[in-house]
Image (cartoon, rainbow, N blue to C red; front, top):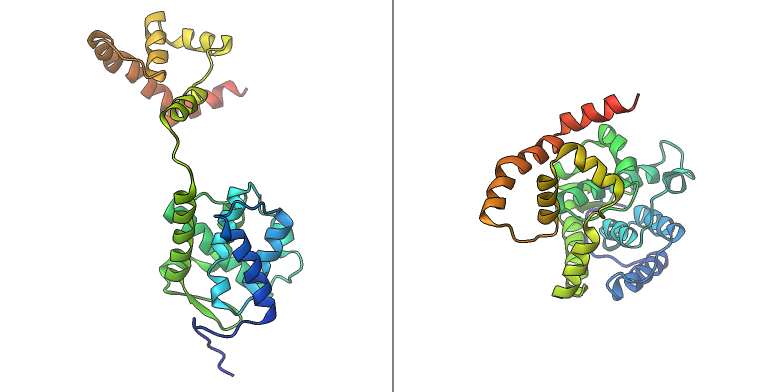
Length: 244
């Protein structure tokens, strides 16, 4: 038997067929079906243990479905049944690390805890995206570009299936995103801005039209104050000195 199997079509085992049917069911309606944490753990484990490349390349897609369903990854559930040196555990680790790199590269939402799980794996496996193939313990090697394209295709499918918000919805979403003028916020702003400056801050937030004079004053004075407040070093100092 060839121990250096590459990505190629093959007859699927009955176990692969079951997992593939579950995946197809999840993907058939653009990922709208609910997926629980325990179900995700079973599916991810099955994909990492599979010698079917058609299944393995969908590993990041399942993680994307987890993100859409608000499923938080549980490292204990994923790894607890394997010894530290288990080849299947190594497969899981590699696929999780590769998925994390792909989510960052593509700007796709990742499930909770993926970054926490993948971060310590970088020192163990390095940057997997720098390789052409992902080699797994079963002897199977899958092209990383195929894994990437599979995730891209799913993300594009989801984006296409999402309804385009109308202007009214956009306006409502913007209003929801704006901070409420609470007494605490008013007091804090009063300590930093004059009444005129504070009014311009809220006017800018509400996307109200400035007069020429207001626009020039905002740019010359208020915006510079806001930039100073937003400065990471200034913010860090403020947090440090107020924690005592």
